[in-house]
Length: 420
Image (cartoon, rainbow, N blue to C red; front, top):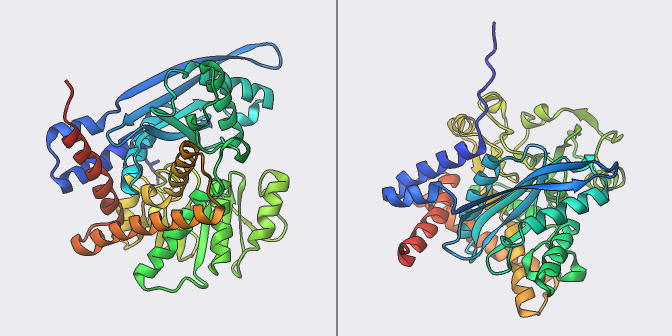
């Protein structure tokens, strides 16, 4: 028998599909649909970098500004070999809905460079980051477009961006990025914020469903900053994390993994590869493992029509951006799986990015407990708003979240009007 490979669907096609579905629910007019289907602006660069061997190599880069009806463009900057214009455009659109959903005065943007950062030295990576920033020097701005960490970027890269932009403008501008090191205006709690928001949503969902969280079995695909933090906090909350994986493969223990030991091992070795205290498993097997809760915290399109029917989790929390394809999600919904969508599940990062921006503007910094408390309040408020639509209108959590996010942006566009 010939097995057909599933057609690979682009993230942009998925994002526009979700927008079309919620537009029907909201009864949006054709003009609003058309306007939100496309980004406001797309900037593409090709940044030259002199490598350590003396050769010059060009790196494609992108910044997509989707919509700023609610405030300055906001969104991460990722370094990955699969970065392309469709992916970045889709993620910028998701950022627009995400910021609106959780009530932040931001629009949505996303950026990326097509590069495998593992192939570059630290000097080459710094040169690339600074050259890309220089190429984007008129795009990034504390009041117009504010980048943040994303896949394979972190506080170090944000410091390079801040410094390059500040030198070009002749003054220090800590507000041009968020996710910076604490020493130059970063916020306490920012590094853990996305993972913390994931677990907060998970606990809210179990409470909403009337199910206890103690001992609930969890599998997490991805053990980087988001997945690792989520595993740690789930473990501390009393959930049983039985399977985790990173890009090199996964590990499981039906009695519960020793998450503190795994975090220590991963930090010391750069990955989980070779972890001796659990049984190995591959990433595909993790997605279909027999658990109560599945947290995809890696890349887009992890669950598709090819494997969705074999997923056994009752609940899925989308820690990654767009980890489910529409066809895969349709299969899961027919099976009765409850899905907390990415724009709600992983909004903790942009929430605390907003806190960092506010602290920098006011030059008054909060304690980590204050940051975490404010994060919890916004996550719970957003979850409750979505849950109310799930209960009152019979929507899925995704369509409930999209109805709020897209609806708020649509209303902002209506009241601002069309110029000229």
